[in-house]
Amino acid sequence: PFPASGRLAFLTSAHGKGNLGGWPVAAGATGLAAGDAICRNLATAAGIRQPGSFTAWLSAAGTNAIDRFDHEGPWMRLDGIEVAASLQDLTDDALASPINLTETGTYLNNWAVWTGTLGAGWEGPSHCASWIEDSAASLGEYGFANSADQTWTFGGEAGCNFEWGYLYCLQNLPLLFFDGFESAGTHAWSGAVP
Image (cartoon, rainbow, N blue to C red; front, side):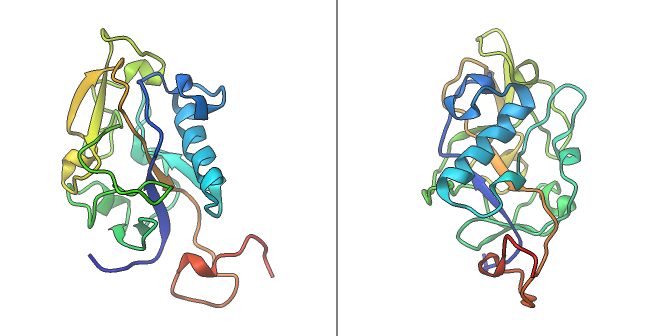
C-alpha cells in the first residue's frame, strides 16, 4: 500500500458486547447513536481533528451502513495508508488496506468488529436488535480487522454477549482545503475558515 490522503478511518481501541449503549465510552447513547458516540469520544480523547465528523460503520433495522455516509472517499488510516477511494471502493469486496489501526496508534490483527453489514454495505441479517441486545440468544454480524476482502465487514456472526467486538469509525465530512494545499493531507486541515 502507498501513503494516501483524504478522510480518516480507524478501528476503536475500545471493545464490548452488542449492546453498544453498555460501553462506557458511549456516554449514555444507545443503538446506532451509541456507535457514533463511541467513535467521536475516542477520536476526541486521541486528539484527532474534527472528532465530531466520525460515523460508525454499522447497519441496523432499516438502515444500511453505506447510506449513513454523505460524502465519497477517499479514506485512509491514521498512518496515511489508503483504505478505499470511494463508497463504491469501500463496498466492492476489496479494500486497499485493512482498517486495523486504532485511534491510539496500535495495530490489531484478527479481531472481530461489529458491523451488522454485508459486503455491499447493506443491512445484514443480524445486528443485536439494532445494537441494543447483549444476550447470547441475539446475534450480530461482524467483520475481521485484518481483512481487506469482503470479510472486513461480513465475516460471520456471534452472540451479542461476545465481549470482544470492536467498531470501525470513518470520517463523514466534505474535504475543504482552507490554506491552499491541494494534497488533501490532514496536516493542512484547519478548524477555522480564513
